[in-house]
Image (cartoon, rainbow, N blue to C red; front, side, top):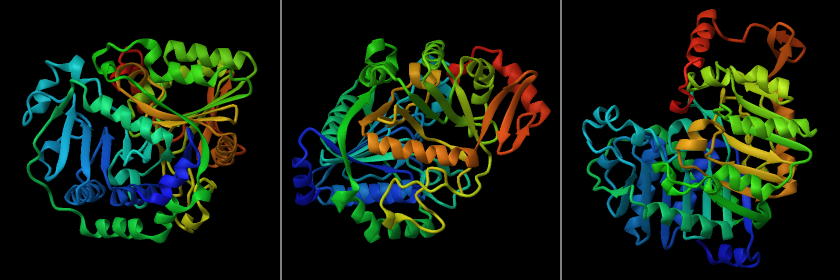
Length: 456
């Protein structure tokens, strides 16, 4: 990192400068730019790292950094990143978290070692020189960054500099040293998509990308808390108060006005349902944005979310579900104006996005949580997760206002009727569940009776 950036951080002792990253192409370009600026160390920790154009380009940048003397460490979840031990990564230290014992026939081990392999390291983090970092909902792959990718979803990351980057680096070290982080020797590599690589490189080389790091005025300085599950959660050995959600609630304290949850996969646990019902009963405006059946890339999740809808509405919780196809985009003023493009903007809701992948909480227009944690049994009880809790009223207010503006255009509001549920689309009230067939609804209803929510 540059000395100017170090001086900027020194001018804000104990605080962190943050920018929210809603734009997919910019989020990848920024990661590449940070890697290129590294002087001493790069630590990358991800659940999914695809062997596609985005994944291969960022791997190539890591190898190039290692070649110029930077210490590069890559920690990947073995379930989410199959085949990583077959990549060519000269100079890069690679460890797989919770790996299957059989490598070539790894799927054969799942039935006999299911309890262990069903737990995953869901963390997503990049730390450069202990000074700058990116965390959030995005894994590494074309579907998280490419504007033209059919599976591109609305997502959110955070670029942070300063104190929280050092804390995140220490957390990476905790995972790197964990017993389940196993060193492996990479081998071969695959050919990349040349056309897509060129587009990614052009975005990384653009002056606007460098400006995101260098422009001091673009950062919001705030107290930022790094929240992370302990690695022992994978073994089921983590204390309850050491998990992310209890940490978050303790730091936020009493919520008195509004609690807005954005979760790609939303299956309330009994404890979470009690929390939301209690807040709503105290007059707090509680709302949830999640995927509908037609927008969910893991449709089975819907089987265990759907039975909760009527109960949540009766508790006073508002429900919004992403539509299967986005309409006009709702522009968010979350990143510098210089990055806005007519066809690709900086919107949380994107014209080309039809699904939701973000994991965000806004409390009382003061606190913002951005990270990897969905609000479902898997994230809350099985996987390890990571996120930042940001105390920034202005930024929280802007994000909440942007969601309020975009929700009616990009999501259906679920309403309770005397004879069932309806989905509000402007002046229209849609029934039955939009975009679904009777046999889909029946199949998911039957599945929802089975106690298998923790599998998905």
